[in-house]
Image (cartoon, rainbow, N blue to C red):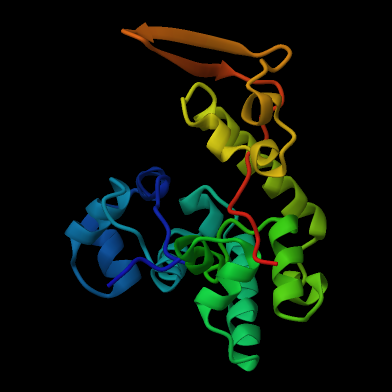
Length: 224
């Protein structure tokens, strides 16, 4: 069975179990109603995720909150998952397939699947989806502030930029390349302020972009 978005690792479980002076077997019996030290061990060593139902039982036994065991905001995760469900419901109401919405929004099928689970939602993506699904951004966002999605977009872009900087195929992942605004892609003219590494092999010369100040992580061009 695939892991659900609402399943969590419990990196802080052992800390709270020891604070409560419980063995793994005792905690299992107290929270789950059975002697199963193995599952507690798996959770503590992050070899297995725990469902929200299991987490609620653990918190009742340990007298703490879900965030104390997961180390993350489970409330926001639940809200994002609900946003993903609204996307699915709206798509099905319009009788659109995942593939159709993915093409309209310029997403890969895998990205569309994760989007409907509430993962990787950004303000730009919500705007694209609201256009494709003929609804408002506010409807898809629910009670999550739009500022959250804007910040999430910046975080994702910064992470992608850090990962891609230095790769030879950086141009193929840049919005300026698709938009025709890159002097290197359009005219083979160096970008002002960039850093490159040139490798000469026989008669072939390879230019690897180490850093480009104009780089902006892009995506698949949208279908008009």
